[in-house]
Amino acid sequence: QIDCVTVKGSNEPMGLYTFDTDLTAVDSEPQGLTLNSPSEKEEQEAEIITYSHHEYTDEFKENPDITKVHNATPEFLQKFGEAFQAYIDGDWGKSRDMINAIIEERVDSTGEPVRDGPSETLLEVMARENFQAPKDWEGYRALTEK
Image 1 (cartoon, rainbow, N blue to C red):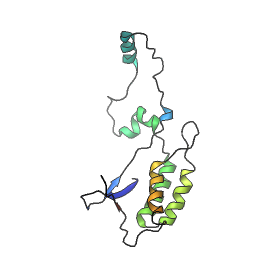
Image 2: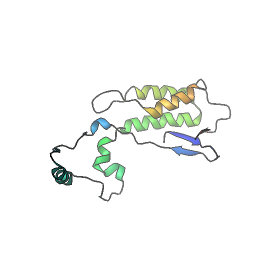
Image 3: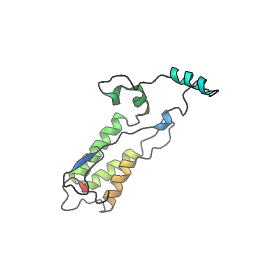
Image 4: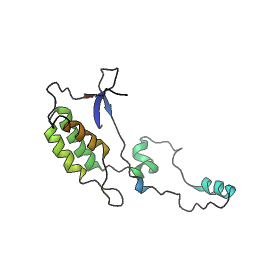
Protein backbone atom coordinates (compact mmCIF):
# COMPACT_ATOMS: atom_id res chain seq x y z
CA GLN A 1 0.00 0.00 0.00
CA ILE A 2 1.31 3.43 -0.92
CA ASP A 3 -1.43 5.73 0.37
CA CYS A 4 -4.90 5.86 1.89
CA VAL A 5 -7.35 8.30 0.33
CA THR A 6 -10.95 9.24 -0.21
CA VAL A 7 -11.97 10.02 -3.77
CA LYS A 8 -14.26 12.79 -4.97
CA GLY A 9 -17.86 11.83 -4.25
CA SER A 10 -17.00 9.28 -1.53
CA ASN A 11 -16.25 9.44 2.18
CA GLU A 12 -14.96 5.85 2.35
CA PRO A 13 -11.14 5.67 2.70
CA MET A 14 -9.44 3.23 0.36
CA GLY A 15 -5.89 2.00 -0.02
CA LEU A 16 -3.80 2.77 -3.09
CA TYR A 17 -1.37 0.09 -4.24
CA THR A 18 1.46 -0.25 -6.75
CA PHE A 19 3.74 -2.89 -8.22
CA ASP A 20 7.34 -1.70 -8.61
CA THR A 21 9.01 -2.71 -11.86
CA ASP A 22 12.49 -2.44 -13.34
CA LEU A 23 12.05 -2.29 -17.10
CA THR A 24 15.84 -2.37 -17.58
CA ALA A 25 15.55 -6.06 -16.68
CA VAL A 26 13.46 -6.70 -19.82
CA ASP A 27 14.95 -7.30 -23.26
CA SER A 28 13.54 -4.81 -25.74
CA GLU A 29 13.40 -7.54 -28.40
CA PRO A 30 13.12 -11.24 -27.65
CA GLN A 31 16.49 -12.90 -28.17
CA GLY A 32 16.91 -14.70 -31.46
CA LEU A 33 14.10 -12.83 -33.22
CA THR A 34 15.16 -11.67 -36.69
CA LEU A 35 12.60 -9.91 -38.83
CA ASN A 36 13.27 -11.28 -42.33
CA SER A 37 9.73 -11.77 -43.65
CA PRO A 38 6.22 -11.80 -42.16
CA SER A 39 5.99 -15.59 -42.26
CA GLU A 40 9.43 -16.06 -40.66
CA LYS A 41 8.49 -13.54 -37.99
CA GLU A 42 5.31 -15.51 -37.18
CA GLU A 43 7.27 -18.78 -36.97
CA GLN A 44 9.89 -17.23 -34.68
CA GLU A 45 7.28 -15.57 -32.46
CA ALA A 46 5.54 -18.93 -32.07
CA GLU A 47 8.77 -20.32 -30.58
CA ILE A 48 9.10 -17.56 -27.96
CA ILE A 49 8.23 -18.87 -24.52
CA THR A 50 5.42 -17.06 -22.73
CA TYR A 51 4.14 -17.74 -19.25
CA SER A 52 0.88 -15.87 -19.71
CA HIS A 53 -1.29 -18.96 -20.08
CA HIS A 54 0.00 -20.95 -17.10
CA GLU A 55 -2.05 -21.26 -13.93
CA TYR A 56 -0.52 -19.81 -10.77
CA THR A 57 -1.47 -19.79 -7.12
CA ASP A 58 0.09 -16.32 -6.79
CA GLU A 59 1.00 -14.97 -10.22
CA PHE A 60 2.96 -12.01 -8.83
CA LYS A 61 5.30 -14.39 -7.00
CA GLU A 62 5.39 -17.27 -9.52
CA ASN A 63 5.14 -15.94 -13.09
CA PRO A 64 8.72 -15.61 -14.43
CA ASP A 65 7.72 -12.67 -16.65
CA ILE A 66 6.50 -10.75 -13.59
CA THR A 67 9.19 -11.80 -11.12
CA LYS A 68 11.91 -10.79 -13.59
CA VAL A 69 10.79 -7.15 -13.57
CA HIS A 70 9.79 -6.89 -9.90
CA ASN A 71 12.20 -4.42 -8.44
CA ALA A 72 11.18 -3.92 -4.81
CA THR A 73 13.27 -6.04 -2.46
CA PRO A 74 11.75 -7.49 0.71
CA GLU A 75 13.99 -5.12 2.70
CA PHE A 76 12.70 -2.09 0.78
CA LEU A 77 9.09 -3.21 1.19
CA GLN A 78 9.57 -3.66 4.94
CA LYS A 79 11.21 -0.25 5.36
CA PHE A 80 8.64 1.48 3.15
CA GLY A 81 5.86 -0.26 5.12
CA GLU A 82 7.27 1.13 8.36
CA ALA A 83 7.59 4.63 6.87
CA PHE A 84 4.06 4.38 5.49
CA GLN A 85 2.72 3.31 8.89
CA ALA A 86 4.38 6.36 10.47
CA TYR A 87 2.62 8.49 7.82
CA ILE A 88 -0.76 6.86 8.57
CA ASP A 89 -0.15 7.28 12.32
CA GLY A 90 0.51 11.01 11.80
CA ASP A 91 4.22 10.90 12.69
CA TRP A 92 5.21 12.70 9.51
CA GLY A 93 8.67 13.77 10.66
CA LYS A 94 9.58 10.13 11.30
CA SER A 95 8.00 9.08 8.01
CA ARG A 96 9.98 11.74 6.11
CA ASP A 97 13.27 10.64 7.65
CA MET A 98 12.60 6.97 6.92
CA ILE A 99 11.54 7.64 3.32
CA ASN A 100 14.57 9.83 2.64
CA ALA A 101 16.83 7.06 3.91
CA ILE A 102 15.27 4.30 1.79
CA ILE A 103 15.00 6.19 -1.51
CA GLU A 104 18.76 6.69 -1.52
CA GLU A 105 19.26 2.90 -1.39
CA ARG A 106 17.16 1.96 -4.46
CA VAL A 107 18.89 1.08 -7.72
CA ASP A 108 17.78 -0.74 -10.88
CA SER A 109 19.41 -3.80 -12.46
CA THR A 110 22.09 -1.57 -14.05
CA GLY A 111 22.96 0.09 -10.72
CA GLU A 112 21.27 3.39 -11.60
CA PRO A 113 19.23 5.19 -8.89
CA VAL A 114 15.50 4.48 -9.04
CA ARG A 115 13.07 7.39 -9.09
CA ASP A 116 10.47 6.19 -6.60
CA GLY A 117 7.17 7.92 -7.41
CA PRO A 118 5.16 6.74 -4.38
CA SER A 119 7.86 7.85 -1.93
CA GLU A 120 8.22 11.20 -3.70
CA THR A 121 4.46 11.71 -3.62
CA LEU A 122 4.23 11.04 0.11
CA LEU A 123 7.09 13.47 0.70
CA GLU A 124 5.31 16.13 -1.39
CA VAL A 125 2.02 15.59 0.49
CA MET A 126 3.73 15.87 3.87
CA ALA A 127 5.87 18.84 2.78
CA ARG A 128 2.72 20.86 1.99
CA GLU A 129 2.00 20.70 5.74
CA ASN A 130 5.65 21.19 6.79
CA PHE A 131 5.81 17.50 7.77
CA GLN A 132 3.21 17.98 10.50
CA ALA A 133 0.01 15.95 10.19
CA PRO A 134 -3.10 18.15 10.36
CA LYS A 135 -4.81 18.22 13.74
CA ASP A 136 -7.83 16.44 12.25
CA TRP A 137 -5.69 13.75 10.54
CA GLU A 138 -7.49 10.40 10.50
CA GLY A 139 -4.92 8.39 8.55
CA TYR A 140 -6.06 9.28 5.04
CA ARG A 141 -6.24 12.27 2.72
CA ALA A 142 -8.98 13.47 0.42
CA LEU A 143 -8.40 13.54 -3.32
CA THR A 144 -10.57 16.40 -4.55
CA GLU A 145 -10.02 16.08 -8.33
CA LYS A 146 -10.76 13.28 -10.76
